[in-house]
Length: 181
Image 1 (tube, rainbow, N blue to C red):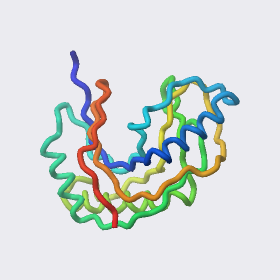
Image 2: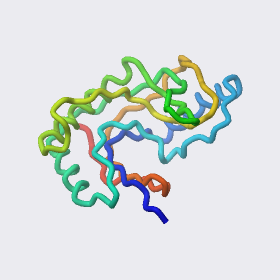
Image 3: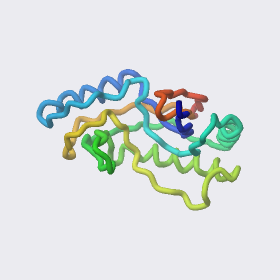
Image 4: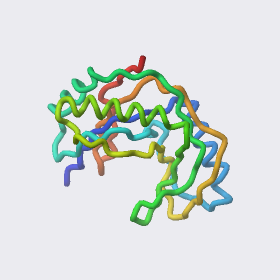
């Protein structure tokens, strides 16, 4: 058996009510867009923020360093809202069907910058901050879904998490939670 690739990153996770709303928006468009892929498990829904790295083995010491880097992060709770649903190009046969937003993602971008600064303080991130477009993948599908404006799906973000996933093995674990003030 070939071991999976260990991936470590910071993310936001929706509460159950927001996850249910997201899937309701997807279900409303499933028939008109001819979507037939299987949705992501609600427990795996997340908005990726800062990538820490990928590793051949479990990244124990890197996890400890990433947690230490978050001691310098100060951020307030904020409202996150997605108002668009559609597929994004992925370069393979299955297209991710995602939620993304306009002004409703400003807080996520701000938190991303704060996390980057904390990681940079321990030499865990490049000097130049990469840009992101906060989004949440709901499913993968062969059908292409054009951009659709939807009733917003959102929640008040009160924490972010450090996730350790093992690709190819279906493992997805929250290693640490960090409260926002």
